[in-house]
Length: 143
Ligand code: ZN
Image 1 (cartoon, rainbow, N blue to C red):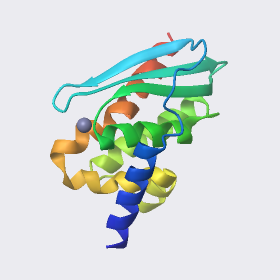
Image 2: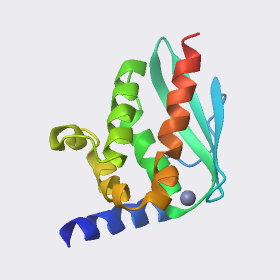
Image 3: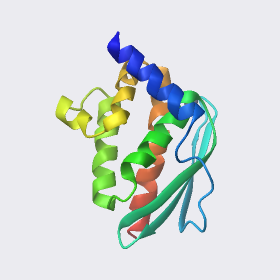
Image 4: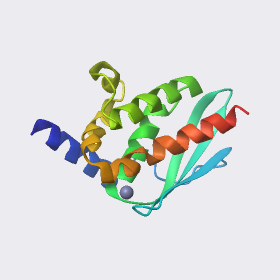
């Protein structure tokens, strides 16, 4: 019951008052992430310099889960190195598959509110959209 309330509060809060939903000024990395099965369509924007995510935002449309997950993700990875961000995204993706440990999930802070998605297969693609897109961006950035 407590988990359920936490989940709803976090999702509602990030949907009504997203911290990071706006156009970044002069992003140097931009990538669109699409989840056709739900209609989620987001664009991540990063200021990425010397291996560090100095600033990040997203724009786009989608369901509550995709939007809240992207907003929470950006809060977590702001100021982080590529390695730290990819470590967190690895934990998130494994949490959604029900494979992350409790200690790992704690590292996700508010992201932990989305762990119940692992029991909702239809929503998994919504929850991982932002993380998957960030992962792809950072991989490409190293080339
Ligand atoms: Zn969705």
